[in-house]
Structures are given as C-alpha cells and as structure tokens.
Length: 333
Image (tube, rainbow, N blue to C red):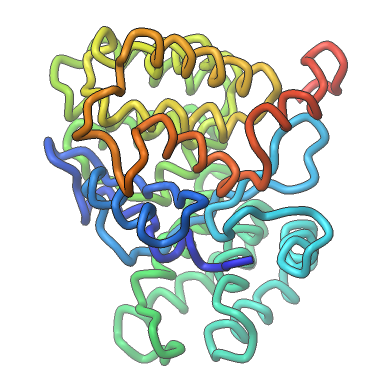
C-alpha cells in the first residue's frame, strides 16, 4: 500500500493555493492508476502541491465507508490500518503528543504526526492548547527541524485545528460557526477552519447549502461546496447528488462536480453512496462529463472519479453499497 498519497496531492490552504476564480484549493483525489492520474487531476483542479494538512480519515465505522486521504486503498487488517486504528482510537493525549514528536523527529513515519494531531484535535484536551501554540511558534521561528522532504506548512493547519477545537468547546458551535462563515466571502480562512466547521452539527450543512444557492458568483459557490466536503451530515445528500448529476444547473462548471462526489464519499453512508452511484448514472446518460477536456490519463472524467473511490475507500462503490446497512438497520449517528 502506498502511503502519503494524500500528502503529495493534499488540499492547499484557502488563504494560500487557490483555484481559478479564487476558490480555496481542494485536494485532488488519487486514482487507482497511481501518480500520473493523480497529478493530472491535481492539475485539472488547480491545487497547490505538496501541502499536507488536517486529515480526513475514517476506519472501522459500521455504517460508513472507510475513507483516507493519507493512504492508497486503506483496508482493515493491513499494517497501515492497524496504525490508524491505534492512533485514532487513542485517548492518552500525552502519548499522542509523544508520537507526534517522534514523527517530527523522523523516528516514526511522518503520517503519524498528521494522524496524531488530528486525534488530539478531536479529543479537545485543554492541556493541548499551550503545547500546540509552542510548536506553532517554533515552526514560525524556524526552530523546529523536520525530516527531509517535509516543510513547516504541513503541520500548521493540524496545529491550528487543535486550537480551533478548543475555541469551539469554550465558545460553542454557534459562535465559532458564525465567525468562520464571516470569513468565507473574503477567503480569509484555511483548512483548519474547514475541518472544524465540518464537525459542527445543528444545521451547519443546511446553512452552507443555502449560502451556495444564494451566492452570485461561481468562485463563492465553490467555497461553500468545498466546505460541504468536510461535513458528514446526511441531510446534504440530495443537494450533493443534484450538484453532481447536473453541476451546470447548480451554477458551477462540470470540472468542479468532483467536489460533490468527495462530499458524498465523506458522508459515507449507504444512502450517500447509492446517491453517488445514481447521480453518476444520470450524469453519464446526459453526457455532463463527456468533454475530452475533463478526461485525464487516457480515462474520461467519470472513469477517473470511479477509480478514485477505491483509492479513497479501499473498495469499489458497489461493494460498499452491498456491505453497508441501510439507515434503518444501523445505529443512529
């Protein structure tokens, strides 16, 4: 299994790498055909690379598909999956910081720093705040030596996410959500804000959809659509399926339809994956993505999008649909 694929073509910071039209750059998904197709998709989306950042990862959820931006086809029972489960299931914050320090020192794989910081952010331990601020200060001052091939920017967003999650716990979802949403029109936000916003419930996805629908410019619509790719709220499924099947009617270019596909994969329930499969069939029937300009690596847009599913989730779409329970069969999430 090839690790670090997500790092090589990661999401760029919203305040840094931007796509045409000024939208915050979203990481291109690696296809199963490896680096050439992944690089081509990255070029299509205009992403900045390399720019590792906050991690979206899920493994072992009985009602949602596996998902990883750090691995190529992550599957349970592999050494990589065992590492993910150990880190993302850990509750000892001190041990997690030790693992992060060891990764930064080059004593364990680099991905363990990104996973460790993601888990630390999830846990929201107040004692992590001073430590995250100290590490950020050392990075900004150039006093933290990193392994060859890695840069300080790769740790900035995970560390900021730790601090933002602590703010969320102090101030509440409503206050922090309002502050983040105020930044969207100017684009003065980054991946940490997107990740934390995606963890908020209480109608956050509905708010993003409403703002998407009322935005006058495609660049602003793309920002809201990209923010939706961080949400697991199943109430967004119908909107995302429509946006994928008919991006032109939603007011965005077909080249950005993959954002809706990303979002449905991250929701990851059987209903989300069925919606993606059916939307893909409707798009193919209408020729939405038929333009040769959208194809890459000798494959058309939909073929690349289909192969990216196995890269992100470790199985084909139909396999997940057959494997996952319907909403009524699984526990409430």
